[in-house]
Length: 325
Ligand SMILES: *Cc1c(COP(=O)(O)O)cnc(C)c1O
Image (cartoon, rainbow, N blue to C red; front, side, top):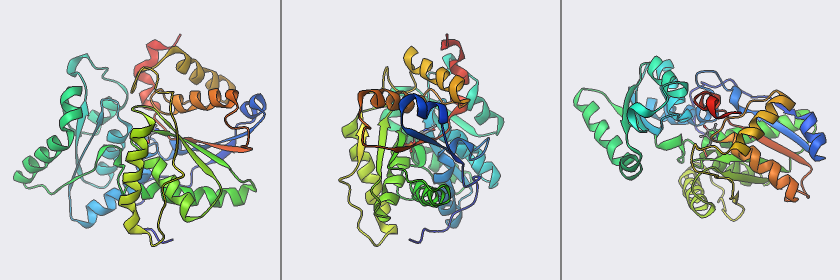
């Protein structure tokens, strides 16, 4: 398998190790892949996708990137910092309610790096984000820039290649560690991370199951989205990628995107105490809460070695401090 060229921005490979105490608690071998350690400013899963998206932007001679996300978007923050590193300008379209939003966390970091920021109310953002990004593009073009638009989460055909590569990285680590993961768990927010892991799994024809916990919308929505991303990425591969094995476990969205329930925050706090690992409230905390509940229900009886993807998001924890007991 030959992936296209990328720009190198992430610190790779990220470590995998066993969560010994958690494993004892659940009588399973539970491992964690620390994709939260891909960097500081650019930390998390988005940078793997941006390595491919930004290479394409570069090749097209672009000098400005436009993207979008929530007020505390990890993807928007990672894009702004990756752009700065590559001497490109960035413009972030964020979904929020203006002055009532917390100004810390990712949003603070976006401002610190000097990104242009446009904030739109949720209703308008959800309906028109792509149109608004196109308008912004035209406006920057009039000023002499050559903009490149990255869709939300960089979850498109090119972006997802970052996680096809991550899957190959996991295979190499398995060999070195002499362990075979039968289940890989990942939080699903826009689907690109899941799609990449899934494609890697199909191309390598392994028996692993890739399981996504959706943290917004529902299972049907994500099966459609992930299928779309896989179809877009198909141009990079000769082998046909079938989509029947996509597996999403629904039921852990809770109160909605970026909204936390106390049981989810309790799960984050208890893992911090048990394993000294800090998850984020929007993605990994919900996927982890899902994982421990499903383990208790017996969903993973047939799994022996489970790999949990820690996809980052630490800066999203700080605006939630007051909600922890
Ligand atoms: C965006 C994000 C995810 C979800 O990844 P997608 O590719 O958008 O599905 C998971 N965890 C964190 C911390 C994220 O920022």
